[in-house]
Image (cartoon, rainbow, N blue to C red; front, side, top):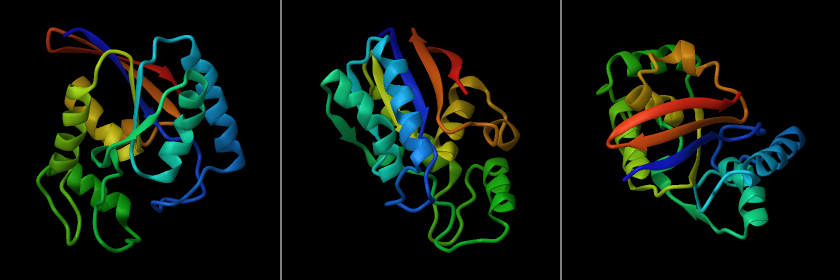
Length: 176
């Protein structure tokens, strides 16, 4: 089935926690996203359960009269169960070895798999609101993004248009 799906990285937030909310600037960015998506044929919105991801796309849903469906498969990559000072180095390791699984965390392969399940099941005109690492791993799967160097450049927010035609992905960055 041919379809267009939009991958959205959340707007600027006050933190990384599940309940972290958008900053004032992030709230303005969410309004900009709303205006951006008003001109597209959006029919469905699915978000990570993280507050910042929901708040990033809620104005769009409200303006279009849509509900935001929550799907934990779009949640941020849980690298390890504790805070690390060298988290970027550990993240690089997890990208080089997609099966690396740290204590209490999940592998990059697991994150990519769960994200791909949502992307593949999405219908035409769906927006998926997620996080940098999850989005980066999805883009590695469908567009050949190489890794951290590229995805550390993702902005708040960031939007990629993914056109699926006969199991081929045509990916284009349209915000950021």
